[in-house]
Amino acid sequence: MKYKCLVLDHDDTVVDSSRTIHYPAFLDTLRQLRPNHDPLTFDDFNHHCFVYGFHHLCELRYGFDKVEMMTEYAIWKNHTSNKQAPAFDGWYELLHRFKAQGGIIIVVSYSESKEIQRDYQDHFNFIPDRIYGYDAGPDNIKPHIKPIVDVLKDYELKHEDICVIDDMPVGLSMAENAKVDFVWAKWAHNDERLLEHIKKTSQHACSDVYQLIKFLEL
Image (cartoon, rainbow, N blue to C red):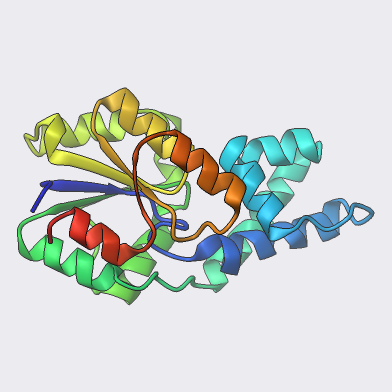
């Protein structure tokens, strides 16, 4: 086993959620708040979130004010509460192999803890050792390194014991700032613009979870 601890993103890393939940939720938001705008394509939605971030999409591209952001959140929360994204193939095997060897599984995600816990329980039959969801507060949200600092201290780990796995640049920033290893999860991305960006970072990247299993020596 190459690492003692995996710090995992959730959306589009472990579960296929942008395609099945977040993008449809945002289209519902646009239909309600910006009905005269042309629909945003899935590739453009992903590209904007990848390069600039979701809040940039809402507040700068579409000019949502604070009240509209509350509406956006309510629509998104309705989707996440009532729909469940499928897990990508290979994660059940990877996670159970890792746990069987004593590995520590931490989730750091922009999803909320309730839905992350539900997904792990339903898809993998266990709860991660620790979850830092969006509801954990601003200091615990990527790219802040506090989750990794906590894990280093609480589990008595060294930096080389930890690997962050994420599909977004904000996860890479957290890993680099915390001086731990990083692997791109690029299996959710088919947009050549995003794949080119990933290639330019010179970080290790996996095209599917089975490649990740080999990389982690599980």
